[in-house]
Length: 182
Figure 1 (cartoon, one colour):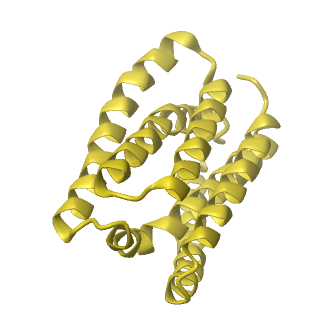
Figure 2 (figure 1 turned 180 degrees about the vertical axis):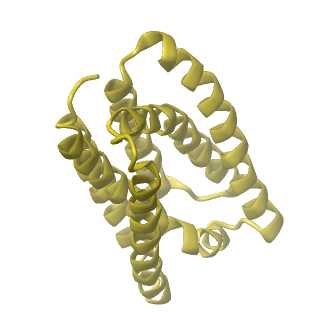
Figure 3 (figure 1 turned 30 degrees about the vertical axis):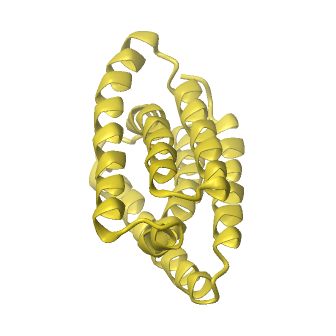
């Protein structure tokens, strides 16, 4: 049961990480296309991390009392789908800040809940290897996603990038729905 739970959690995470990693390497280029300068692009990514960090701390504390980890993973994934969808409408730096803030709140919902579920599904005595699989597969997904993103950005196909991200986030959400309620 734990092994199956871990596999589903890893699959949901890989789909989500792939989606996020398609955006990361081309984000600055996209920012330039909507009129942001280097400072605004850096500040918007900084805001994403600041809001993501604060929301992860605050929502993580709430999740501990609520004990519905799976629900928070799904809510977080859904928020990020909405947030990424808004990239289609970004036309200026201010909107870029808003879109990243929405995505950061989604991160605050899914990250602590996902880690809680994964920790519960671990097998004693195999913690290092199981977290090794998590980190290793994340790096592989990021490598593939970055390569795809570079190709699509090189051909100026930003809308395809956002469609791919939405598809992968949606698939991650569907997999998260199959995770046992704990």
